[in-house]
Image 1: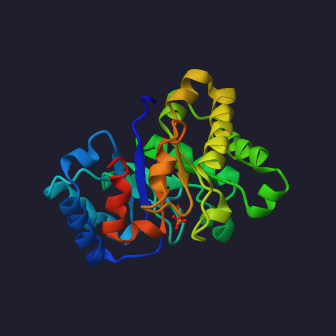
Image 2: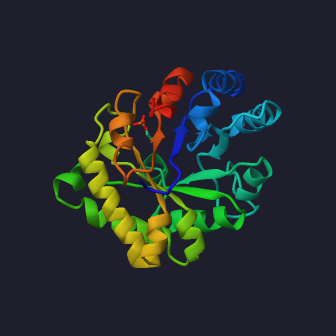
Length: 257
Ligand code: PGA
């Protein structure tokens, strides 16, 4: 049994306004018993406009859910129209920030260098990055999966302190599995996660790599979470589509039942 606390995170992407977010949070809280969240960390990453309302709901009802954000800029403030700084998120008691999601890399041109700046900025404000890595279908078919994820891990952690690397959450998300209904088999997910862990060991040592929590993401559903979480190398999940419905997300959180 791994000593790493499993972490199940919802990535709503660009869905749910703040009214829906409040209802969702209350419903999730009603659906979950204390035993469901004992020993499992639950995170919800809504769009920016929902953060303040969700923070208030979580605080006033003492809901055992941590708040996450999907993106941030790396500077504290300045002429960056449309961006949100990590300091602004930290003020809202945001605990996790996703960095390097494949949609940000592919659609918004987030490079490895930008991901590295974000990882450092998130840590500077005492939040924890959820660093996403993963290969395209083309890369997978060309046998380049391992090189791709190793390179992404190395670039993201350049100049990052070992203690911070140890606490960073990594999400292995094969791009061909995101939103497609095709998920990696537990065998494939576990094999690439082992490559990611070895890449962390090469940078920061074996002890550090044993502490890092590595999630799988890509078409995780109530029906496949159990088989993934049975694998000792898989420490949680980053869930997109199936996290939009609080009932489905609650079933994913209750994967042990
Ligand atoms: P999905 O998305 O669960 O809808 O495949 C996962 C993600 O993008 O984080």
